[in-house]
Image 1 (cartoon, helix red, strand yellow):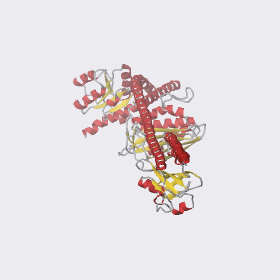
Image 2 (cartoon, rainbow, N blue to C red; image 1 turned 30 degrees about the vertical axis):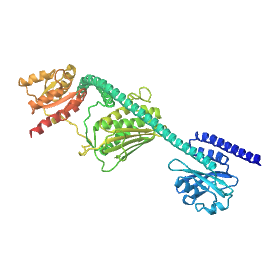
Image 3 (spheres, rainbow, N blue to C red; image 1 turned 135 degrees about the vertical axis):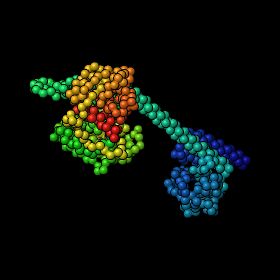
Image 4 (tube, one colour; image 1 turned 120 degrees about the horizontal axis):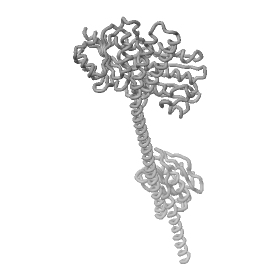
Amino acid sequence: MAQDRLREVQDGRSLQAARWADAANAIERLAQARSIDDVVELLRASARRVVGADGIAVVLREGDQCHYVAEDAREPLWAGQRFAAEFCVSGWAMAHRQTVAIRNVLLDPRVPQDAYRATFVRSMLMVPIGAGDPVAAVGAYWSDTGQPSGTEIALLESLARAASTALENGRLLSSLERLNGELEQRVVDRTAELERTQEKLRQTQKMEVIGQLTGNVAHDFNNLLAPIMAALDRVLAADALSPSIVRSAALGMQAAENAKTLVQRLLAFARRQPLISTAVDLGALVENMRSLLASTIGPCVTLDLSVAPDLSAVRADRHQLEMAILNLAVNARDAMTGSGDFAIAAEAARGPLPDGLAPGHYVLLTVRDSGCGMDAATLRLATEPFFTTKDAGSGTGLGLSMVDGLISQLGGAIRIDSAPGQGTSVRLWLPVVKAAAAPATLASPDSDAETAQGTLLLVDDDALVRMGTNDILTDIGYRVTEAEDAQQALALIEDGFHPDVVVTDHVMPGMTGAEFALRLRSDHPDMAVMIISGYQGIDLIAPDIVRLSKPFRQVHLKTSLAAARAQVESARL
């Protein structure tokens, strides 16, 4: 009997050693687990063998319920079922954060008798899982009554602690991965922001260089055009000319006007064109362009103009805005193969404003066509100067860039939406002004009676420009005295010459036209002053001084002279 007893002890020790070995192996595998699913599966596969139980179950806490998610038992228990935590042993173990050992389940008040009576379970061990606030539990069940041994308790608690550590490691790793992901996203966002900033800087620098170059070219080119247009204007105004001479002069004037328009477009996309912004009734402006738009897009294209009632006036240069709308109409016509729909709608802007647009009230002008549309690559380049998809000789590539430059210069924004086969929609946000809108059209003087004759001092350092302007002024009826610069003009005035009007160039050596005009304003307030500029530095001219951009026609000069003299007359009253 002693030998049998010894053999039993040795078998028991061997069994315990095997269980501890299994427990060590399970603990090592649990150390690699990183999710609750991994922990559940490892416990399901190892806990019953480690503890020597007739069945085990893994329970997850889900709010106020206990979910028996997995089991390994000689007979089915409660896998997949949920029980109220307050009536469940696993719920009690998790709530009290302590191990529960029950020698007879049918006698313990913590056990829901109805759930256990139909099973083989007569004794049990329930251990919570989760440091601090348990989120799960593992239970071991036996078919015989009796207190679970200390070894069984120690083994199951070891597995539970390893599972708790695995869950905590998984939580920390998940947090680390989330933080790492957030950090990576922040790096990506910051990099994208820096790239956008650098791109904006490059674009700003590019536009500044283009603007300076364009300004210089515009000034010189307009000075060349001014005498050409002045001479052609005089030829066209002459009597008794042969038809061939009239045709040649008209052709030359049309070419000069086209050159003038090209310079204006160059200045527009460079954001350097001189603007005369007033309160503009957008509805009246669009309606007045109806016949022009209809003839531009052609008879086979349907024209639809829609303007919301009581629309606020916008701050814009009327002429340049008309040119922008006309450019969009030309682009729409070219994008439609003979027929289609062209629509212009104006309404108060609602909803979020485009990025970069200052908060405020705006009118949204939308120009749509049913043309061929643009792909993404073309759309990205649409507002770039000189970019065009038209055939050689069919376009300058300045239409959309001119619109973009104008709207930016007015303090608005432009957005273009397009897709192949879906047409194009151009949205323009224009700032609202409180002042009443100016009339839609301004009458031009039809006779010399609108500009009183008198003496005029013409100041310009360019002899050709001075000569051409002198001829026009003489034709109008003025007695003209010339000066090469502001200093010479001031000397004439100081010697007693007192002209009715002073017409001066702006960019001149020594004293600029703006400085000269302000000097006259101070010393001779009764003397009308007007500035003519080829472009450069026109933004520095005081806004209340009448100014005229080169090149110009006789009618433009007469209108500006009348405005300059009207200023002086109103000041006297």
